[in-house]
Length: 82
Image 1: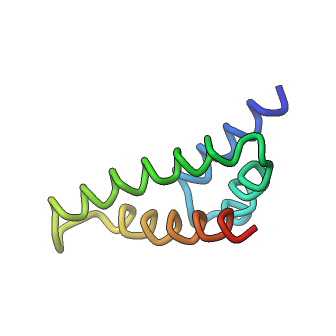
Image 2 (image 1 turned 120 degrees about the vertical axis):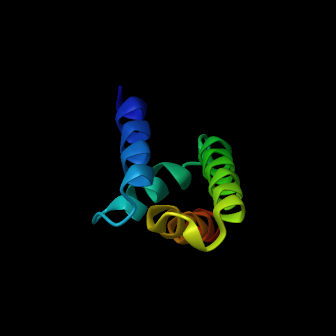
């Protein structure tokens, strides 16, 4: 159940990257070697999708997508640099 709560916290962080503790929710699970690959893949997949949205929408991309791209890049760096 603890893993489920951490995954739910990551999902919430991705939906609301500006909330306090969003980055911490990701690094809590991302720094665990057992789950690093899963978290890193999840973040990379979401980042790829958001970049696709940005490329398709250009300057009219939703602000939330731009913010999430910045957040995802920061989160990936945080778990990669442990």
